[in-house]
Length: 260
Image 1 (cartoon, rainbow, N blue to C red):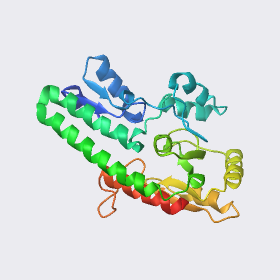
Image 2: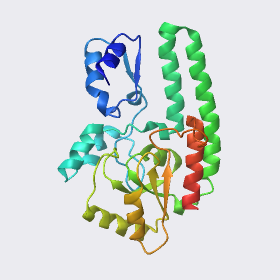
Image 3: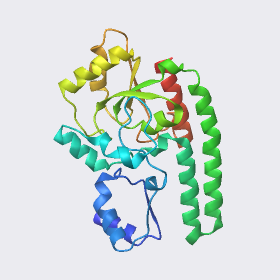
Image 4: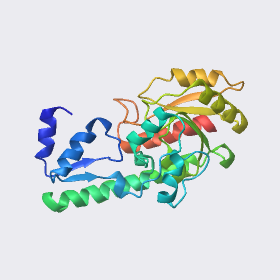
């Protein structure tokens, strides 16, 4: 954020941030504003966040007991990457119920200074998200339980796996950021895991280059698809993913295409 933007935020009645380290380039500014008594609402921390790292199964319910264990990383760079994102996963929007709750919480907070219309709007958005989630669940039902296996480019689908009954068996880039790095030893281990699990697809992010995923897929004897999901942003015009609800619907359809 520029100095002018920081000054503008400092004068705001309310700042809404995702939190849990997602806004890496703005963390210092947000922390300084909050230290000065600024009205900062970090929404992810209010939604029972999951630990970062959800390989091969669901995240345990006792988050505090397991968060530290999930981050015993041997590689210092990976350790620093995990630290950048904190102990908890910031990608809560892949759980549509949490996203509905976020709309309600933000609407209620805005209503304190802006009037009841904000709370009504938050409730309306939440209802629409919950209705769309029923369509997402129906779409995902096409995937047999044994095929609900995910390999992703970075650790972003933990909430999705936990909410919709999938297993994450591998991550190409350790940690919750696409800015991390991997090495040949980790990739070889991932190829072995994918072969054992009979993985059908690798899921990337439309915002990042798929070259590394294509190389990984070529290392496998069987045909493995590389499918780009809308992970960190909505799609552009005519993408079919121009709203949050559309994004989740098209992601569900893409996952079905990759795993069915």
